[in-house]
Amino acid sequence: MTGSLTIRGAWTAARENCARGCFCYHASWRLFRRTGLKGNPRWHSAFYQRALAGRQPSEALVCGSSDETMPQVLTELQPSMRITVADSCPTPLVLINAWAKETGVQVAALQSEAPELCGIAGPFDLVVTDGLLSLLPGPADRQAVLARLAGLLSDDGLLLYTTRVAGLAGHLEYDRIGRVGQALTATTWPATSAERMDLARQRLRRPSRPSPFASQNQIASVFRSRFGQVRVFTRSAPPTAALALHPAFLTGRGSVCVGIAATRPRRP
Ligand SMILES: C[S@@+](CC[C@H](N)C(=O)[O-])C[C@H]1O[C@@H](n2cnc3c(N)ncnc32)[C@H](O)[C@@H]1O
Image (cartoon, rainbow, N blue to C red; front, side, top):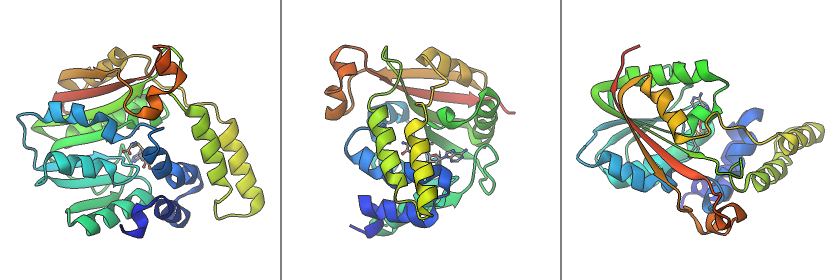
């Protein structure tokens, strides 16, 4: 396996490429994904399979991809699909290019930030994004991203959005472990020790990101403003053993995986 595709390789790529704001996230991402503690596109594979049934998209855009997992999942579903990945940080692009080189899969990986998505030209018959709306500052930013993605779709194109909604516990499982892990990662940030400690303290103190959505219906209604047809898929079974063993799932208060399949884009 190529160096960049290991946990250590991802950490090294993050040290070389990330800005302060995303270093802790990208440097620790592969560890959290592999341990099954944090949600990733593989948790939504069954949704992608169902939503793509009867379709054979040839041009796909992935908007935001922490590492190579999303293009990997899409390629497994449809090997001939040409995939473009846009991410605001160079680190995922380094990992995706390493994966593409190792597997021979053709992927165009571009540093580009939504909603502008400079350098990205459609039409795409498939646009996929996982969790991106929760990372945006407010409702206007979410609308701007959805408008741009809708504008990049072909008339019969399909947009797939996946995320998780916290259960009755109010926050996603392993959030605290995630923060501690990111704080420890901050101590390896290539900066002065004062800057590293400042970043670590900030990660520890940062309250868990309040999700903008409390239910699948709230998510669907955001998509209905931009698409003529919106289907909602949910899955409440724990996607990994780590989640199955979490107290939230053991007491019936676990998070829910949500998939949105949107078609008939309304032009901005
Ligand atoms: C969208 S989520 C994807 C998470 C998902 N677990 C995955 O593995 O695909 C996180 C990714 O989005 C990127 N990102 C965050 N905001 C973005 C934006 N406005 N435009 C493009 N990429 C963005 C981050 O750099 C990160 O790599």
